[in-house]
Every structure is written in C-alpha cells, then in structure tokens.
Image (cartoon, rainbow, N blue to C red; front, side, top):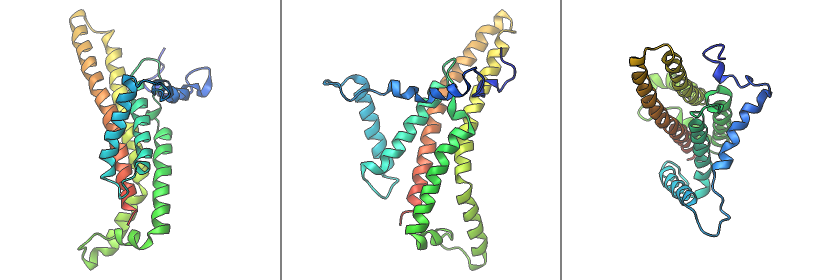
Length: 224
C-alpha cells in the first residue's frame, strides 16, 4: 500500500535495499547483439539511430570524429531508456532522483572545466566577458558568467529530475482518483491517463535529448 505520494520514488522501499537501482541495467537486455551473422531489424534501427545522432551532434562539436559524439550518444540512450522504462509498472525510475542525474551531469561539467582551464586558459577568461560589453559592466558580467558556469550541473540535474517526478506524480494522482469516481467519469479519467501517458513518453525522449544537447554545447564552449 502506498504510504505517501512520494513512496514510489523511494529506492529503499523493498526489502532488498538498493536492488531497485538494478533497473538501470535493464537497458543491457534491450540492446541488440552485434554478433549475429544477419542483421535483425532492431540492430539496423539502432545503427540508424546512432548515425542520425552522430550527424546531429557533430555540428555542435568542434571535432567531427565519431569518438567525440559517442559518449553523448551513450548518455542520451541511457537516459532515454531509463525514462521510458520508468513508465512501466513496478520498474524503478532512477532518472527521477537527483543523485542519478547529478552523477551524470557533475563529472561531465568538471571534466569540461578542467580541460578548458588547463588547455585554453585565455579562451576561458575571454568567454567570461561577452563581445561588445561596456567597460563599466565587465566586472558584473564576469560575476554573472562565473555563477552561470557553476550552476550548470545543478540546472541539468533539476531539469531532468523535476520533469520526471512531475509526470509520475500526475499519473499517480489521476490513478488514485479513478477508484473514487463514478461510472460516468471512469472513461474520462482513463482517456486523460492515456493522453498523459503519451505525453510522458514524449517528455522522456525530449528530456534525454535536451540533457545531451546542453552537455554537448557546454563541451564545445571550452574548446578554442
């Protein structure tokens, strides 16, 4: 029985402690094997999707090699699969937790900052002051740009987690109210839940894409 509205987001709700986090590895069961002699449809779809993402992300990066976009493609697929699997019953939504999202955003941001300040120090200092900034506003712009760079992992984390939590809470609220509705309102509530479920599938894919694109833009800023 659900004790409170947020109990579905509790990773320790089961007797097996942190076994709920194992749901993040369900993506390994869905990835197609590349050892088949004849390519199946799932493998061809995965290759086509990876190639399309590579063409999309390489325009945002200064380097056009496949290795530069491969890490971002893996992050996108990992987040998208976790967001999508979280819509199924009895599957833990790991991407709705700040710890999970921060574990993805913070190392990327830290690596970008270290690379930029160690290899392109002048470029990083110049990036703190936008072009055509008046001399009187330069100290304030440096402060604003510094704060903006520091809070980037936090904004990526909150954006992903908040969108996942909001949709799941709304589905939970509608599901709890369906049992107390009259017979004439049940069909309306079911139609609303179906429409909201379709919207949540779109949100799951969009949030993974937004997280990846913003991470790619942040990485392109540190390269001269």
